[in-house]
Length: 302
Image (tube, one colour):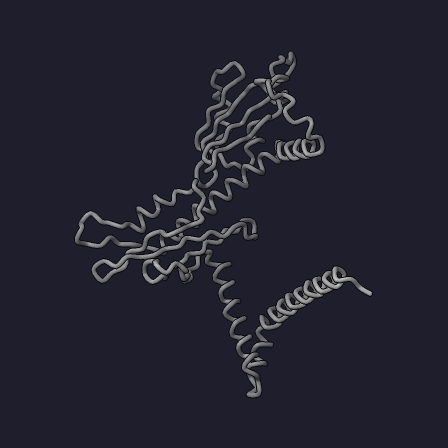
């Protein structure tokens, strides 16, 4: 005779299977109802049930929403604030910004807006948002969603459409710069070495803190040793790091050379300060750095 624990386990397994079957059924229904010819055939006969009509309408609305999200990238929606003391009776206007890189959705950001009544007009202002701190959100708000104009009696002009477009442009540019830095680290072999070091640290936790009292790492200590026949092209890259906004990149080589690069919003190197191992400016290497981030390491090696 089965025990209570075994019965509870069987019941939980059945619930999991039922949930999986429901999800599979919803997926199949979504795929079938998305076919244009099938939806047209189902709408033709008069004997179609109300539930089928409702399912067709819901799927068509969902498809239209997905098309807007995929093509426009910026969509608006309404939200109800559950706070009973919220202004405007809790009515919130939400702006959803979808960022896609390389044909794949990377992240979705949200900006929630409320408004204040002033002389029979509404002025939008930021209520909450999920925008990263490195994005100049406040600058865009001051320019496109101003709260006060030069003339106090005249309401400032607000442009929510331009605000959403430029904010999405900032987010896409930031994600592309982040991806470009990751590609540089992968090209230099830093991503693999860091993941390998992380795996070794997890496997051997007793090695953690091995150089706790040292002022330099093993790589820095080994770089202090002069290599008599080492050419600049044979030096390996120790680190490629950037600030949060990816507007400045610092590259460090094993032969003590360094490069500090200024990056534009569209991912191009506009300024470069490269120094040799003795600290002097390397004008030749600085000129080679100018250009897109793609191919930066190849230009610096050449």
